[in-house]
Amino acid sequence: MSVTLSFEVNGEPARLSVEPHARLVDVLRGPLGLVGTKEGCSNGECGACTVLVDGRPVCSCLLPALEVEGKQVTTIEGLVGPGGKLSEVQQAFVDKGGIQCGFCSPGMILSAHALLEQNPSPSDADVRDALTGNLCRCTGYAQIVESVQLAASTKRQKKGADHA
Amino acid sequence: MPFDYHRPKTLEEAWRLADSDAEARFVAGGTDVMVRIREGKIAPRALIALSGISDLTRIDVGPPLVLGAGVRVAELQSHAGLGRALPVLGQAAAQLGSVQIRNVATLGGNLCNASPCADLAPPLLVHEARLRVASAMGTREVPLASFFVGPRASVLGPGEILSAVVVDAPAPNARAVFLKKGRVRMDIALASVAVLLETEGKHCVKARIAAGSLGPCPMRLAKTEAVLTGQALDDRGLALAREAAEQEVRPITDVRASADYRRHLAGALLERGIRALMNGAQP
Image (cartoon, rainbow over all chains, first blue to last red; front, side, top):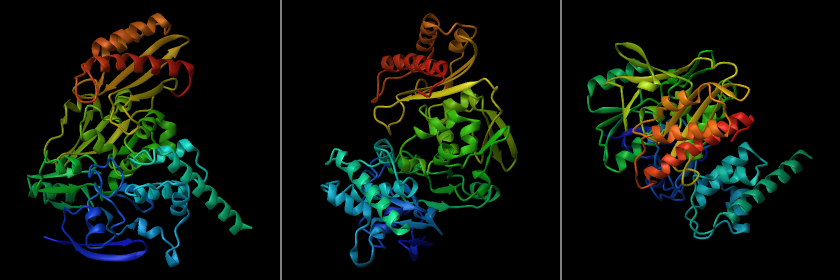
């Protein structure tokens, strides 16, 4: 028997009928068509399905969809600005080669985004710690850490300019 | 596997739901339960989620310290008052899973899951934590040391919910540390050890040692504690403690590690923990 779920996704209200056992990843990729969220291991280990719930990274493969009732969910689609402009973190992943096959990238980028919201000047160790739950089988992680550091520095410069 | 999903706002409502469906089971963050359902290890007809019950998410730094069972692991890691009152719990929380898991997994879930490797259990065991177990019939307190009865088994009866973890103020000179060895950073523990010491000079006045992944459930190492009590914490004393711990643990061989290696880790982590506390440094 379906139940009604209301939440906010990428700043827009969503109200839809879901099966009670549906996981958040099922609802995002299915009825909402937000296929930027990837499902890898389905066990909470690879982090490909990472989305932000009220700004915090979670594995959408482990979270019953009904747990986001009334909450704000951000998927990779939500980071893109007007006119398709990539966010600082997305652009940095492109510029530094933090993306190869791209399957881990949405989760990786959302985890990095959440880190930089909390900590604008992370050390490399902070970055690696924040990305522990996101596996990449292509890049070897060095370019990913560089990407996050580039994004951090771009964001800091931008913030400095805004305040000037 | 389809299941129904209830999200009560109060404990009373949760008990009513459990009463009306004997095959429903309680779930907290669900980071273990959802995996077990997917793997077909359990097939509950309904889940009663405790995540919407605000009474379960309180933190009162006390003393006594009272932690709601629904407190997220990430909050154990970042809560400033808790970091002062019981720093060793934050150390363990920081080593549990990934950011994504810690944002969802709860204190109560980690304990009720009753895995031998539960990272939050050893630090709470050395602080002699008590668990408040609530049911429609009333609330009872259970020492954490007698909560676990085997792998994935606890004393919780039908309709009982772990509501809070209570910890009395530690002695002012007591210091504790938690060490975990995993294959990689976010792996479960191959072995973990929590050490609480009260010392006078180089002598150990009181020791409490607890171990994870080193027996059928997280456990205190009473014999090792006895060896340490009154012991000079020099190389000889540490060697005796290490030997006692290696004898006392009851590890198994599984896909992650052999029993022999785990036995070695028990001693090594114990020694490393004691040395860290003696040096006053974090390991």
